[in-house]
Image 1: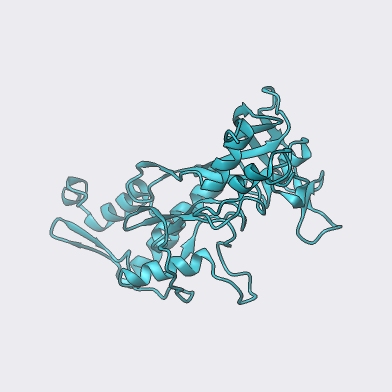
Image 2: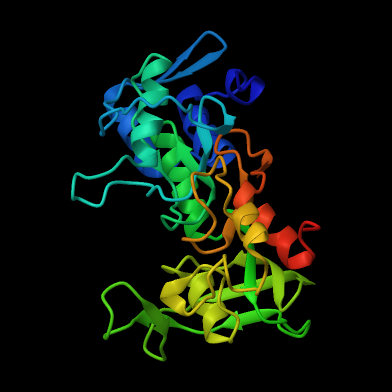
Length: 312
C-alpha cells in the first residue's frame, strides 16, 4: 500500500511505475515483464504484484534424517548452514547430495512452487551460511548486491604460523594453476582479488584470523593466505598442515580432536575455514540483515587445542 504517492497522483499508472523503480528498486527487466504479463495491478488503494508465481524447483528434492539448518527465512530470502563435505550445487556427475537438493526438499515440505536459486557458493569443505533467493525479484536484487559488493561475508580461518598485525590486506590477482586441474595460484595475469584480515589472535604456532572478501574468486582465502606463507590447517591442496598429528600432541588429544562433529567432518580432512557472518540488505524492505552461523564443533576443537587444549 504505497499511499498518497499514488492515490494523489494525476496519472496513477505512471506513479506506480515510478514508485516501483525508484522507491522499491525493482529491476527494469522484471518491471517490464510484469507490465507485459499483467503482473502489476492498482485497485482501490492497493498495489498488487505477481512476485510469487509457482516455479519448478529445478532440482530433485532429497530427504535426509538430519533437517536443513535454517539460519534465516522470510518470503524473499533463505539462509542455510552448509556443512563440511557437501557441495552447494551438483557438478554434473550425478553423484552426491548437495545443499541445493536439501533446499529443494525444504521448499517442497512448505508447499513447493519455489525455484532453488543460490546467490553465492562455498567450497565443498568450507562451512558457513549460503544465501538463497525465493523469487525472481529477490534473485535480481541480490545478484546485483553481489556485483556491487554490498553483500558482506566474514570468515574465520585457522592458519599455520604467526600472522603479523601489519598484514591487513592481500591484494593479488588469482588465476588457474596450469600444472594442476583444481588448484589456483597468485598470477599477474589472473583476476583481481582482494582479501582483508580484520582480526588476528595468536595461538600456539598458529593464528586465528577474521577475514572478509572484497572479491569472490575460487579458493580466494586459501590461495591468498598460502601465498603469504600462512596456509590453512587441513588444506592439503595449498600446503596446510593436517589437523591431527601436526602439533606433536598425545594420542589421547588427537582422539579428542577427531571426535565426530555435527558438521559431518572429523576435523582432519578439510580446510579450517568457516563463514561465521553474512550481511546483506533485504531485497524488498532494504533492512540490513546480519545472519550469524555458529562455529562447527571441529573448528572449536582445533582452536581449543592450539590455544592449550584439554589437560591430558
